Length: 339
Image (cartoon, rainbow, N blue to C red; front, top):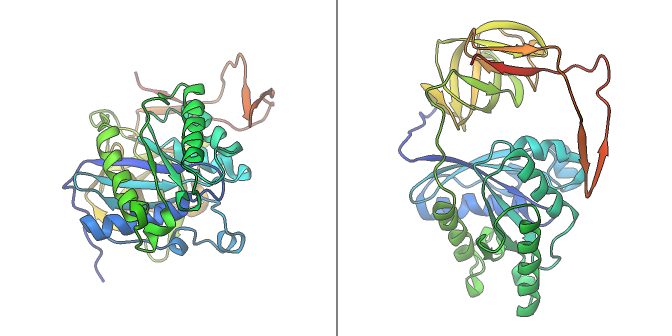
């Protein structure tokens, strides 16, 4: 069966869900796909289709980032659902680094928790420009004053990490109600629809570096039987076209290959553009020859540096800062643009 071709008829933005474990990020992600599909068209994704790895189903938590798509009235959104568990913070960082804006999910019943704070801090550090808040599980809170208190706590946290907490939009609702098609007191479907409209109005369309040399950090690598190796990631700048030559740069020796296909959400593209999360099919490249952390780039425009001078290195652990040395022999790569 031939694959559907992706139609670029709306501006494209990258968003995602962040927040503490079990506050409802994946439930909200599924609810967003359902409400948007019912309202503006498209396909809904169930909770079990988003957390679909065996370990995720067994433990009932998100471990890896998951990507879904949905349409609003005026935009096409690529949405990454980030893990909230502290053990998988590196996967959260990978997802957040791709976002044009984030949806901070906070349980109205529990209020801000450790990963709520950590995810706001990490969003600031990786450069997430905008945050919209969804106070989830509001159907479990009968006290209006408690809701107001949780909202104030979230705004204070945002202000602490240099986000405009006083002006940040906060939508109150229940993702589970929306996922089940319920809308008591406009906390279900109406709240999720309001969240989408808030994304449309609050997060501006970013300027994409379309005219610069192609560069795409590799987020994941996998093989497709009978077709070859596919690398996935967000195109940081430039354009990659089918049948164009590209280079795999960093960590290992630079290798040239050819892009034989570009897809987004299992739909075919003639080209991948800056800002889009795509899968690129590579000719004659083995799965073991590519790894996460390398980049796909236009030939001759990027190189990896094997020596760097480091003044200080700090790693964040919850609320504490600790210093770690750069160890001799530790593999690393720093990209140097051609300018």
